[in-house]
Image (cartoon, rainbow, N blue to C red):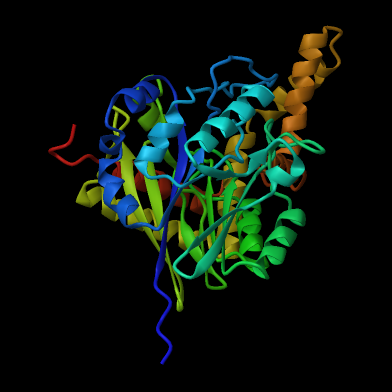
Length: 413
């Protein structure tokens, strides 16, 4: 009788963006202590994957971009700290990896290579940008692909930059890889920030990757955890939230205005001959920026939050109504803003015109922004701008559960 192939365990975390006090802590403290509650998960995994959302370089040479998005950078020495934490692969397809231009990306790639940390999702040529990381272990070969939803970092023509999520190219790469590798994990950086339900565009994009042949699809970018589901037998996580990110000014105010920023989930994927099992492990990032555990009440609220989100996205009409309400909330005041963008675009002042052009471009280039703009305009055209009470009630529940998840254990600081 043929013995069963041993289980293959992969841990995937959300966004890692260590600047300021978090950077200093990672460079001066025992980094395993910073992630102590997750250390046992990392230790028993065959592979740990995280999303590095910051270039590792010394020279400040920010690219030209507009809006409120900051230009991040951190010291190359952080590569060694990430290696010490247990990461084996870092994904780079995100909206900040090119914040310091080509030199920032080059230095990041060099710093990771020096620590023998594999990476994917960004590179200096198209071949590098879209090439997966291949990992072998326990009689399996695993390909890890990484794509992102537009943004200033995406590669143009022959690179350099980040791999853009494309419904045709990305899917074809996965289908081709299906013939070469036993397992495929697709890591995506996409979606709408701070919103507790993925848009229909995000859901469709993730499901398309599963349909193309991925064995698991894991997403991040919204800065809060979102629900998960099994689609055609494939686990999909719509956002893991932040893993290590910060610091933010006035943490108490952030927690009030953006519930979920300090809430994290870590995906544990266990591959066996019976398929892929998924378990989400919730944590919170404490005000000192290290990981902490959730209270029992918080864990319960987190799981109810995930169950409610799953119930919504697997009920098409309910999902549509929720997302239309989100579009109404985001679209309010858009007319006045759009009028100003158009006026600025026609300005005789080149910097004002350039900024307006970039903002208008962003509304249509990035799929998440495009989806909101398109849906909002449709609601106006169809005279359906009035709020939906049922959708509002669902959103109120979701935000309430996010806040309840962060109720701290009595013994915790």
